[in-house]
Image (cartoon, rainbow, N blue to C red; front, side, top):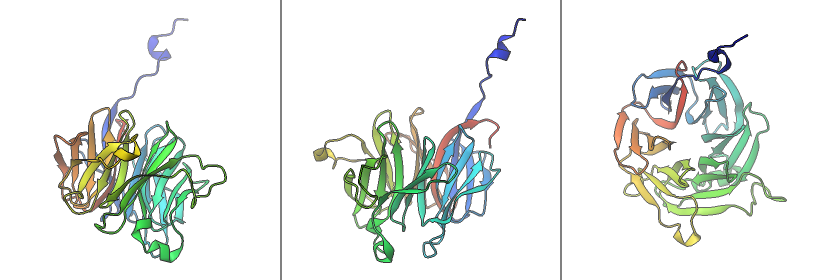
Length: 309
């Protein structure tokens, strides 16, 4: 029997590029197109949401809820791309104050601010583990120099990057790097493979990686001129050259979220003033896509099936 070509080859599904944004003040997640139009609220009643990651292949959106730092009740939740089937992945108290979250392979990676940790788990929330611990106890938690905030993962080189914010405009913010695989005999509090890449930053927050060009991008919510910016620097540099970072975007109102579209040569940024921006990767062609949207935190970019809104 002759079979038509259409029955033997799967039809490619149409996709649309969407932005997924966390509104901290409204406790909700909304989605828009890359021009800031077609706003769709996906979920409400989130408990101070901060970090977001989209898993297009499996059809899920993950986000962190900071909760109340005094109560140690942070959590991670998941919904389908259309906002349905809400499920708690890491229950309240399973992490202290989770911030930015990233998806790599079959793991979720996030930073825990007052918990002073870098953590990960399976996509169903099982096997929660600590990769880095920068302090322990209430006394250590008082010092924002120990707070882990932003995270990014390089699966090819099996490394992760994270920020430690430091005090408000104290210029003690730092960016570190370590291996995804814990060195033999090491513990989260005593890893010999941790590299300090950049120091003396105002208040570095979220991270993203351009793996094609080996560039590290981050937001900084400190005061101008070095703060309220998006910065970038090569991921692979000699120690002596690491002071040379580049400000590619400024005039933010406490920059928080960042998401790169490397293929499209652009990035998307949120700030606490309620703005969503887009610029080229070098910071040119800056445009405001949305404004006065409440206090915005994390943002994710993803090409999703056209029916997933």
